[in-house]
Amino acid sequence: MLKRGEGKTLRTYEVLLHALDMQKYVTEAERVWKNDILKSSWSIPGRLVSYALDMFERHHKPREVIKVFLPSSSPKVE
Image 1 (cartoon, rainbow, N blue to C red):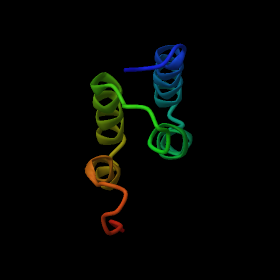
Image 2 (spheres, helix red, strand yellow):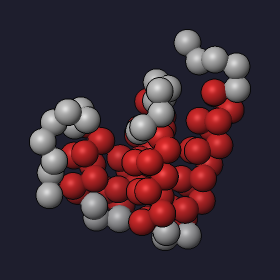
Image 3 (cartoon, rainbow, N blue to C red):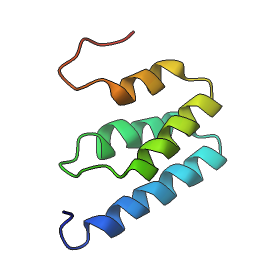
Image 4 (cartoon, rainbow, N blue to C red):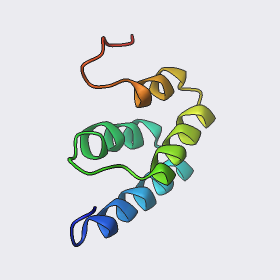
């Protein structure tokens, strides 16, 4: 269960990813995804994961799509 305000924060990140994606700032969107969303203690909604997968696929970043599914303890994909 999300604590008070966390749902709004995740929605804000979703809007930010969408804006960066539409402006073709994929590197910045990738940085937000890795540093802010994946490292948070929140449970990530399926809609946000689905959007990230679509975004990485649309910008031809197949390794990033794979990294979405790797647990943090798995070996790095280079």
